[in-house]
Image (cartoon, rainbow, N blue to C red; front, side, top):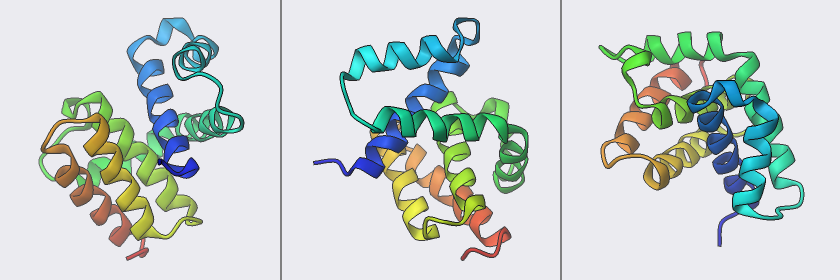
Length: 137
């Protein structure tokens, strides 16, 4: 069984990817589409939307931090799913409420579930560097 916190992160990732893939649709359409796909999840979807909105507001800052930690990788060359996993992880590291090890573990779990076979190691490496640069590890 997936913990509610993990489900919230997964739904936030799905919202971020839907928004990036079809920006002309708008945020509300992405939210309604995800709600139709996953069915009722009381509280989870609204919390996921708040998390995704927080990432969107700080996207420039999050991207700069991820870019600085992604040796020899331009963010626009990183696959959309991995890029949004990094944004979520960096956002949580910046807020500092969730322990850094949990942020890394959850981000790796998202990469295992939604991205390619090399993504977990890549996500782990970048977020570890970000956490260290922020003094969280």
